[in-house]
Image (tube, rainbow, N blue to C red):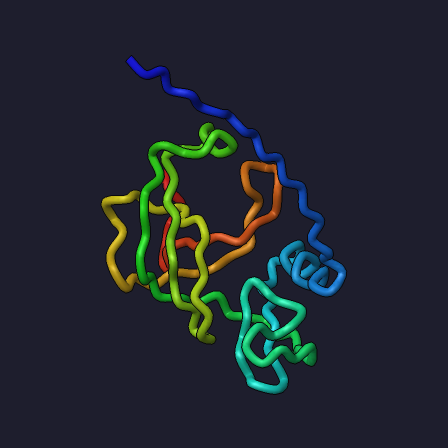
Length: 147
């Protein structure tokens, strides 16, 4: 019988992402505002914001405030979560198209999975994530908080 050999490699990656060009986004979230960037050259809107336009490579960007209105495109319920989110499972991840154009992926809260419908109206909002971090997530546009 041939003995199988395996090698286990562990890859540890650390990245520093400079946020000075998009710090206005985080400040806006603290105030409950959803800020995006809009390229002055090609008029594309980016959320989350980018400092430079990946379409035309311009660095000439404007800040705009989004209204948060969105339409659900797709969703999934995560039952087996990555280790870092295991205490929060099950949870729902949704992709929706904002009224202003960008498609956004975010958590969907305040709704039971069986109540989710294609093309339902959502609202993208700033929210405290388990009292720890400030994030943005979707909620049903006409939702009453779940009890």
